[in-house]
Image (cartoon, rainbow, N blue to C red; front, side, top):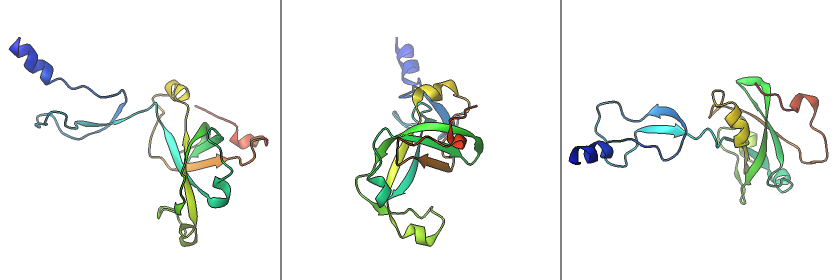
Length: 152
């Protein structure tokens, strides 16, 4: 029983399913109980963060349709929905290219990709990729042909 208990204590369990992004510790290193061993990506919760000017942010509803085109995969148009709109404006982050753009007040918005769609393409799901989020401020307008969903 004691040996079984010690073996069970040494078992690694992830708090959720996901893909290993990188190892925090290497084999043979000692880790305290509850310590972090790997960094996991939850491939069922993928979103893009983008920023909207004050005038546009007030016209965006949660659940609004978004189309994502990644720089590394421009042949694909990924459908998503607005899952978050910040309640407070902020200055444009420094990652934005021009100084004049960085001076403006913007609202942070997240567009989440449907987990059921992600489940169909587990090997293609990547995180941290730059791209463009396209949003219609008038939901009655049709998406242009080049922004119709196109998936692998």
